[in-house]
Image (tube, rainbow over all chains, first blue to last red; front, side):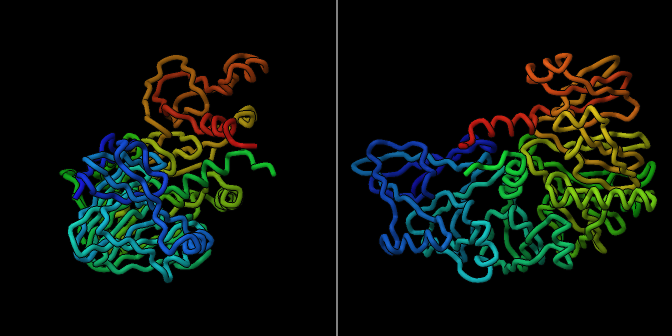
Length: 226
Length: 255
């Protein structure tokens, strides 16, 4: 398994993945900052070109690149777009749910699938969907946050703003709900949608909300012409 | 249902209503100075008031009610005024004047974070008045009265500083800054850029004016409006300025 080190935490974290000969790492498209010349990059085309197009039109932009060290050891440097912390999750038998924009990279044995169903429907407008990461073997997933990363232990019930979610143990049950008692109260409360967790497990949250930040800054910008 | 990492706060007492002399509510500020987040551990009877939209997480048994931020002592007229302003702001964007009230029948935690990158500050209010700039208020516990304050006609020229929030009373107060926060103990005159002003103690006098003097100075200096403080008291300033960020982004945006 490649060795992953994360530097420049927590504000401008950068993941350094050290690959042994023929070892691989998969990373979110656009995450690569630098790599050794003997590392070969290949764009994953699950389902071929048509499959890729279909997923693009479905509102998904989840494409990954595979990096392979050829003829010797090599390294890949990975970063996310926004300022914030990153961490490595060691795979567990149950696996993890990951908010799509938090995904940075994973080792090749980790299966990363897009979750369909209620969650996806609720979020499709905001471009947010949920990934499920599972692995039969040891593996690692690198996730990134907007802001600081905080681990919360769920012992029963926790309610979390969907914009602050990073990842959680797949042992937890979750459902997406309005934040308040009614839709008007939810709108006024400004909390939007929340995720209700039930059971035992860990949840990682980010201390800033990308959507909220985009709205706050975006609303102050002049309207785009054309 | 225990919050993670219970804070070591020896002075924490299960005070039903923190008032004068009561212990501060148990809380912890983490991830500062860039991405500060606040956790408040509520005891039964305590109510956390937090800026609408600032909740990150809460225990499920902590109830959330959306309220208008008119303060407990506000009369009907003040409430109506606050409601109209709140509605306008909710629609056009910017800081809302709605707040969420969090309370729990058994101990429970609420996590709260501001929108912009930066620090959170805590202040134990003991009867004094603190005036905060738009967007600086994050959360509070206790018997605090909040009043909207108009910055004067001149303040309308500047992008910030048209409205202030005057907070007075006894309780716990958390406010945020875009970037780092610096407390300056003013003794005599002191000038602060409007966009960098987080708040000031109510006993200070201040005057809003152009930095460079005259209309040309206002346009050419790039400094916009400044607040000139007089007297003795504390001023809080932030190391970044939202208006400057927006100007910078606007210049590089494709047209």
